[in-house]
Length: 196
Image (cartoon, rainbow, N blue to C red):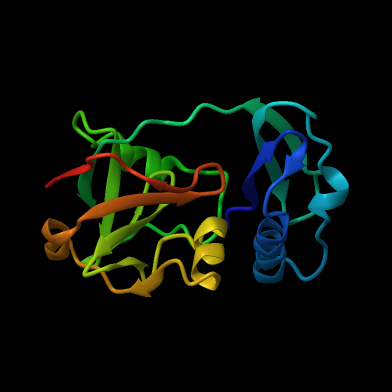
Protein backbone atom coordinates (compact mmCIF):
# COMPACT_ATOMS: atom_id res chain seq x y z
CA UNK A 1 0.00 0.00 0.00
CA UNK A 2 1.19 3.51 -0.81
CA UNK A 3 1.10 5.41 2.45
CA UNK A 4 2.31 8.89 1.42
CA UNK A 5 -0.25 11.31 0.07
CA UNK A 6 -0.13 14.83 -1.31
CA UNK A 7 -2.40 17.84 -1.36
CA UNK A 8 -1.61 20.80 -3.60
CA UNK A 9 -3.43 23.93 -2.51
CA UNK A 10 -3.57 27.32 -4.20
CA UNK A 11 -2.48 30.11 -1.85
CA UNK A 12 -3.15 33.62 -3.09
CA UNK A 13 -2.35 36.72 -1.05
CA UNK A 14 -2.32 34.69 2.16
CA UNK A 15 -5.57 32.83 1.45
CA UNK A 16 -5.66 29.04 1.09
CA UNK A 17 -8.30 28.53 -1.61
CA UNK A 18 -11.11 25.95 -1.55
CA UNK A 19 -9.78 24.36 1.62
CA UNK A 20 -12.98 22.43 2.34
CA UNK A 21 -12.53 20.34 -0.83
CA UNK A 22 -8.93 19.51 0.09
CA UNK A 23 -9.99 18.60 3.63
CA UNK A 24 -12.60 16.20 2.22
CA UNK A 25 -9.89 14.47 0.19
CA UNK A 26 -7.54 14.20 3.18
CA UNK A 27 -10.41 12.77 5.24
CA UNK A 28 -11.20 10.29 2.43
CA UNK A 29 -7.59 9.03 2.43
CA UNK A 30 -7.65 8.45 6.19
CA UNK A 31 -11.06 6.76 5.95
CA UNK A 32 -9.80 4.46 3.19
CA UNK A 33 -6.42 3.51 4.61
CA UNK A 34 -6.35 4.17 8.37
CA UNK A 35 -8.62 3.13 11.20
CA UNK A 36 -8.24 6.52 12.87
CA UNK A 37 -6.37 9.77 12.68
CA UNK A 38 -6.37 12.77 10.42
CA UNK A 39 -5.61 16.46 10.76
CA UNK A 40 -7.04 19.87 10.04
CA UNK A 41 -5.53 21.68 7.07
CA UNK A 42 -6.94 24.94 8.44
CA UNK A 43 -4.89 24.54 11.61
CA UNK A 44 -1.66 23.54 9.84
CA UNK A 45 -1.45 25.99 6.95
CA UNK A 46 0.21 29.34 7.64
CA UNK A 47 0.89 30.71 4.15
CA UNK A 48 2.91 33.71 2.96
CA UNK A 49 0.75 36.84 3.03
CA UNK A 50 1.69 38.10 -0.44
CA UNK A 51 1.98 36.41 -3.82
CA UNK A 52 0.75 33.23 -5.50
CA UNK A 53 2.05 29.96 -4.06
CA UNK A 54 1.56 26.24 -4.42
CA UNK A 55 1.16 24.85 -0.92
CA UNK A 56 2.34 21.22 -0.82
CA UNK A 57 1.11 19.10 2.06
CA UNK A 58 2.76 15.67 2.20
CA UNK A 59 1.27 13.31 4.77
CA UNK A 60 1.31 9.70 5.89
CA UNK A 61 -1.97 8.05 6.90
CA UNK A 62 -0.12 5.76 9.30
CA UNK A 63 0.42 8.77 11.55
CA UNK A 64 4.13 7.94 11.84
CA UNK A 65 5.17 11.38 10.59
CA UNK A 66 3.71 14.84 10.97
CA UNK A 67 2.51 16.42 7.70
CA UNK A 68 5.24 18.27 5.78
CA UNK A 69 4.16 21.65 4.45
CA UNK A 70 6.01 23.80 1.94
CA UNK A 71 5.18 26.87 -0.14
CA UNK A 72 6.55 27.18 -3.68
CA UNK A 73 6.04 30.25 -5.90
CA UNK A 74 3.72 29.16 -8.71
CA UNK A 75 4.22 29.40 -12.45
CA UNK A 76 1.57 27.92 -14.70
CA UNK A 77 2.59 25.32 -17.30
CA UNK A 78 1.51 26.27 -20.81
CA UNK A 79 -0.41 23.47 -22.54
CA UNK A 80 -1.21 23.66 -26.26
CA UNK A 81 -0.94 20.01 -27.25
CA UNK A 82 -1.91 16.68 -25.69
CA UNK A 83 -0.49 13.30 -26.69
CA UNK A 84 -3.02 10.48 -26.35
CA UNK A 85 -1.47 7.65 -24.30
CA UNK A 86 -3.05 4.34 -23.34
CA UNK A 87 -2.72 2.53 -20.02
CA UNK A 88 -5.30 0.06 -18.74
CA UNK A 89 -3.60 -0.70 -15.41
CA UNK A 90 -2.75 2.68 -13.86
CA UNK A 91 -4.51 3.31 -10.53
CA UNK A 92 -4.46 6.81 -9.08
CA UNK A 93 -7.76 7.07 -7.20
CA UNK A 94 -6.10 8.95 -4.33
CA UNK A 95 -3.59 11.78 -4.65
CA UNK A 96 -0.50 9.71 -3.90
CA UNK A 97 2.93 11.27 -3.52
CA UNK A 98 4.37 8.47 -5.69
CA UNK A 99 3.71 9.49 -9.30
CA UNK A 100 6.25 7.23 -11.05
CA UNK A 101 3.63 5.54 -13.25
CA UNK A 102 2.21 8.89 -14.37
CA UNK A 103 5.72 10.25 -14.94
CA UNK A 104 6.50 7.22 -17.15
CA UNK A 105 3.43 7.99 -19.26
CA UNK A 106 4.37 11.69 -19.39
CA UNK A 107 7.75 10.66 -20.85
CA UNK A 108 5.83 9.32 -23.90
CA UNK A 109 4.46 12.74 -24.86
CA UNK A 110 6.71 12.97 -27.98
CA UNK A 111 7.11 16.74 -28.04
CA UNK A 112 3.60 17.52 -26.83
CA UNK A 113 3.12 19.69 -23.76
CA UNK A 114 1.25 17.02 -21.79
CA UNK A 115 -0.53 13.69 -22.14
CA UNK A 116 -4.19 12.67 -22.19
CA UNK A 117 -4.59 9.26 -20.56
CA UNK A 118 -7.04 6.77 -22.07
CA UNK A 119 -7.93 3.71 -20.00
CA UNK A 120 -10.11 0.81 -21.09
CA UNK A 121 -11.38 2.86 -24.02
CA UNK A 122 -12.29 5.98 -22.03
CA UNK A 123 -10.60 9.37 -21.69
CA UNK A 124 -9.43 10.03 -18.12
CA UNK A 125 -7.05 12.89 -17.15
CA UNK A 126 -3.86 14.67 -18.15
CA UNK A 127 -0.72 14.18 -16.05
CA UNK A 128 -1.52 17.18 -13.86
CA UNK A 129 -5.21 17.93 -14.22
CA UNK A 130 -8.75 16.79 -14.81
CA UNK A 131 -10.08 17.78 -18.20
CA UNK A 132 -13.29 19.10 -19.73
CA UNK A 133 -14.40 19.43 -23.34
CA UNK A 134 -16.93 21.76 -24.90
CA UNK A 135 -19.05 19.55 -27.17
CA UNK A 136 -22.61 20.03 -28.39
CA UNK A 137 -23.08 23.26 -26.47
CA UNK A 138 -21.93 22.22 -23.01
CA UNK A 139 -18.83 21.34 -21.00
CA UNK A 140 -18.38 17.63 -20.26
CA UNK A 141 -15.77 15.92 -18.11
CA UNK A 142 -14.93 12.21 -17.95
CA UNK A 143 -17.47 10.36 -15.81
CA UNK A 144 -14.74 8.28 -14.17
CA UNK A 145 -11.45 10.19 -14.01
CA UNK A 146 -8.29 8.65 -12.61
CA UNK A 147 -8.46 11.14 -9.73
CA UNK A 148 -11.51 13.05 -8.58
CA UNK A 149 -9.89 16.45 -8.28
CA UNK A 150 -10.99 19.21 -5.92
CA UNK A 151 -11.61 21.75 -8.71
CA UNK A 152 -13.59 19.16 -10.71
CA UNK A 153 -15.75 18.42 -7.65
CA UNK A 154 -16.45 22.12 -7.18
CA UNK A 155 -17.36 22.70 -10.84
CA UNK A 156 -19.65 19.66 -10.84
CA UNK A 157 -21.44 21.00 -7.75
CA UNK A 158 -21.75 24.41 -9.43
CA UNK A 159 -23.12 22.66 -12.55
CA UNK A 160 -20.48 24.34 -14.71
CA UNK A 161 -19.62 20.89 -16.10
CA UNK A 162 -21.43 17.57 -16.56
CA UNK A 163 -19.83 14.13 -16.11
CA UNK A 164 -20.25 11.78 -19.09
CA UNK A 165 -18.32 8.86 -20.58
CA UNK A 166 -15.86 10.26 -23.16
CA UNK A 167 -14.12 8.13 -25.80
CA UNK A 168 -11.18 9.11 -28.01
CA UNK A 169 -13.39 9.10 -31.12
CA UNK A 170 -15.26 12.08 -29.63
CA UNK A 171 -12.14 14.26 -29.59
CA UNK A 172 -12.40 15.48 -33.23
CA UNK A 173 -15.75 17.07 -32.24
CA UNK A 174 -14.25 19.06 -29.35
CA UNK A 175 -14.75 22.81 -29.80
CA UNK A 176 -12.81 23.89 -26.68
CA UNK A 177 -10.70 22.15 -24.04
CA UNK A 178 -10.19 23.15 -20.40
CA UNK A 179 -7.90 21.83 -17.69
CA UNK A 180 -8.96 21.82 -14.05
CA UNK A 181 -6.90 21.59 -10.91
CA UNK A 182 -6.45 23.40 -7.62
CA UNK A 183 -3.87 25.80 -9.01
CA UNK A 184 -5.44 26.79 -12.34
CA UNK A 185 -9.14 26.49 -11.61
CA UNK A 186 -10.97 26.16 -14.94
CA UNK A 187 -8.34 27.01 -17.56
CA UNK A 188 -9.62 27.10 -21.15
CA UNK A 189 -6.72 26.23 -23.45
CA UNK A 190 -5.96 28.30 -26.48
CA UNK A 191 -6.06 26.17 -29.65
CA UNK A 192 -5.24 22.84 -27.99
CA UNK A 193 -4.52 19.98 -30.40
CA UNK A 194 -4.61 16.24 -29.82
CA UNK A 195 -1.97 13.87 -31.21
CA UNK A 196 -2.84 10.20 -31.50
